[in-house]
Image (tube, rainbow, N blue to C red; front, side):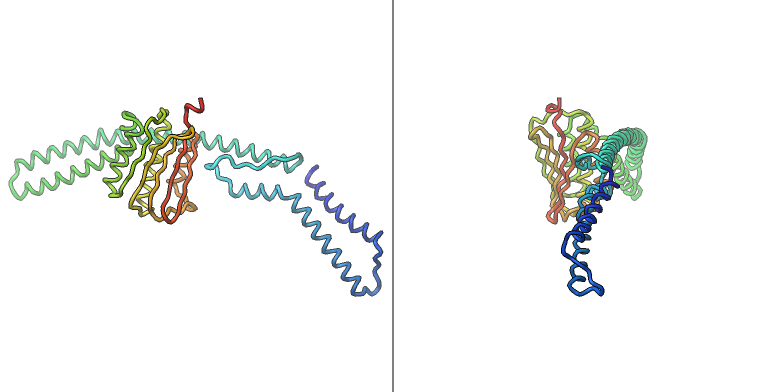
Amino acid sequence: MSLFWRIFALNALVLGSATALLLWAPVTVSVPVVLTEAVILVGGLAVMLVANAALLRIGLAPVARLKKLMTTVDLLRPGQRLPERGRGEISELIRTFNAMLERLEHERAASSARVLIAQEAERRRVAQELHDEVGQTMTAILLSLKRSSDEAAEPLRGELQQAQEITRASLDEVRRLVRRLRPGVLEDLGLVSALTSLTTEFSTHTGLRVLRAFDPGLPSLDPQTELVLYRVAQEALTNAARHAEAGRVEVSLRHADGTVVLAVTDDGHGCGVAREGAGIRGMRERALLIGATLDITSAPSGTQIRLTVPDPRKQS
């Protein structure tokens, strides 16, 4: 039954019931209307309006649920669907909307994959240029400064040595940026070694205490999944240092119930998940890229970012 005929039938039912009561009930209307008759008429009208409103509310409830989902749906949280019941225009509208969500989620995942792949390629290119061009140039400058300082007399020697220390610190910073842009340890030694190196460097650079808990015998993961796990851990540590005002961060990597779970937990003041910024949305896009689930729990006692990756051995 179409929406028009459903609403028409509901109103016809209410009006028909009222007409039947007027025809067969022992109720009369005097002229002028007495108080008791007015009370009965107003009460009947109120009952008719309430019944009509209740029936319309029931009939249009699916439309209200559809409107709510349309205003709150987020493609970075896939799987949000409305139940499809019965037939008719509303059910067909819900089925069409669910199919549209399915298509948009697939298109969003595909476009995000292309963007992230291009982003990683650009990071590798920039890292290579920093290493080959800037790094080698600064190394040459450092050697030149050392030779000059060895041959110079005071006080010029002290100034050259100071310039040498500044250049060496800048070269170390360039190397650190290269490691952040292109984690060579991940490609050469694997995920656990890369996370160990990342957390060690993070602790040294920020002064935060970092605890590690990595399960032995983790399943073999493909390079893309390892890169996503590494980038999520990297972004989570960056958020903890910038926003959480934490003193301790724990990074764990566990294997249980057919999944690999990365968790980054800090003891800060919470990040306010309602205000998700580009960093968290970037993590959600990376999670979609490998079919993983990202959960963020924020409380006054700290924040936990948890990435759950299906075990590839269970999927095959």
